[in-house]
Image (cartoon, rainbow, N blue to C red; front, side):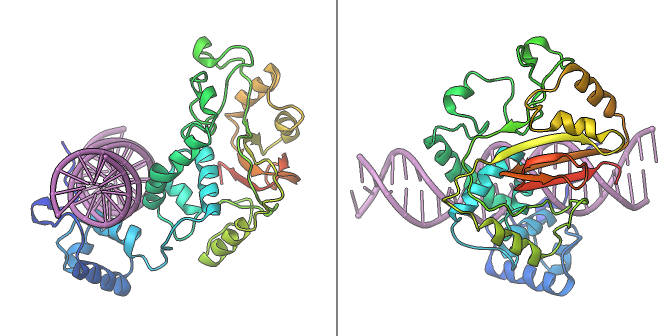
Length: 294
DNA sequence: AAAACTATCAACCGCAGAGAA
DNA sequence: ATTCTCTGCGGTTGATAGTTT
C-alpha cells in the first residue's frame, strides 16, 4: 500500500507565493504558533499543502531570519562545518543563527564550491584537488577513517586491523579559544536560547586573523565507563594517528558497553579536557560529548 | 535591441525517521 | 510487530534576474 499524499494536490496552489498567502500564513502562525503543518493550510485558509507552508515559513517568513550576504566569517564557518558534517545542511544551519538550511545549501552550491575549487580544494572531500583523485577510499574527512596504515580498507575489505585517523588539518582557521558547543550537548552547558546562540556567534566572530592557528577537526570515540584512561590514552595526541591492535580490540569490545562517549572536537592548540570522558583534547575550540545512554 | 548564456534561490519532490494507532 | 501519519531533510528543478555576445 502506498503512502497517502501529504495533501490533496488537485486543489492546492504551487509555485511562487503571493503576498496575500504570505500574510495569511504569518497571521495564522502569529496567533496559533507553528505546528501541525498538515492541518494548517485549511485552518489558515490557504490552498497550499502543509509542506509548502512549512517551507515558506522556515525559509522565508520566519521573523528571526537574517537577510543579506554571508560574511567572510560565516563562509569559513560553513566550510569548517561542512568538512566535519558533510551535506548535513540542517546541522550546519543550526550553527548559523538566522540562516536556513536551504539558504546555506544554495550558497554552498553557488559560491563556496567555486571558492574552494579556486583554492585548489575539493569541496566534497576538503582535500587538495590533486590528492582527491588518488584517495578514493574515504570521501569525506568526517567519516570514521579506518584505513590501515599500510593497506586501505577498500583493498582488504576488512577493518580488523585498522588505524584510527581522525585528524584532519586542512585549513587555516581564525579564532580565539572560546568553545563552540553543540546545542544538545548534555555534558556541557547546552545552548538552548537564541540569546546564547547569538552570544556564541559573537564568539565565533572574534577570530583573530593574526593568530593563524591550525584548526584541528578531530573526531574521537572514547569510553565513559571504567578504564576510560586507556581509551583516553588511545585517543591522546601522543598516540595518534594510529591505534594498535590491542587498543582496537579494546575499542571493539567497548562498542557493546552501555555508555560510550562520542567527542567531536574542532580546535586550536590549547589544552582542554573533555568534561565527559576526560579525554585530553589538545585543541579546544569545539567539543561535543554525549553518553549514548543518556 | 535581442538572443544566448549564466547565476541565483525559492520551491518542489521523494525519502527516511519518529511516534502514534 | 506492523502499519500509518506527520515532519524534516537533502537533492533537484525551474523561474527569474543579470550578464555577455
